[in-house]
Image (cartoon, rainbow, N blue to C red; front, top):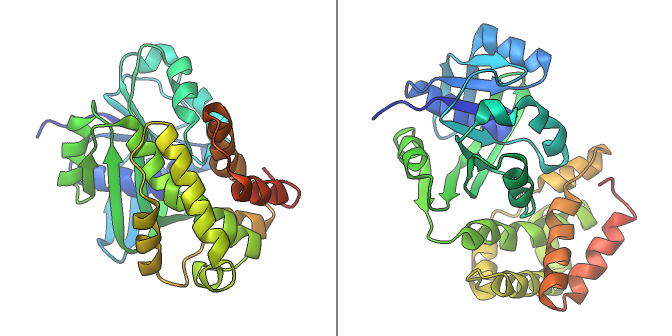
Length: 293
């Protein structure tokens, strides 16, 4: 397989994991990050501690700003940090590269296409439990590491598959974006509301959980995705009771949350399509008064 020059913007849990696995396969990886993280990656490379992959290290470059052309730019900061992070990727350097965001929500696609008109911006989504424990160091919990990509990223899909990730190329961008959000939005909103894991949500707010799943699925269908609320609820029942969400953890820590990228995006899409989402509106409205966003 021909190697790809990879830039990872925001080498946190997601970016660090993928960058590490690609670097192990021989792809040149440059991590674009703040000075401390960039310096650590440049000196020590990337390190992964994973239930699935074991303990691995790989060499990688660290830089504060993209200065040379790449084939692929993976955009992996939190949605709340996206706009300032993009200053690290000048459009004139990026050129016609493939840009694949692995972010929560929907609205980043329009932002990236406006910012990088010459690039090929292709939707992506990832399901994984991974967190940065130190600059350049990632902890991956469990075995879930599944990536979905829209058409146009086939070469990257092949590289990620060879690196050991579970990869699906879907025929529709809307499906890639909404498939994750149909699960994530209800879970994130209610675990944050209760400051409790999913098992408690299922026990105490089961009706709200089902209503949220049905409302988000309705918005997804209006936006062109195939969304099945019953299938989402069936999958939800298989998820371990101890599952928490990053929004819940951020809210508990008093840091800025992705409420607008997740819940706010659902409300704005519902308004565009004329879909009534009373439970989603009530819960997002309550959280807007309680958490930072």
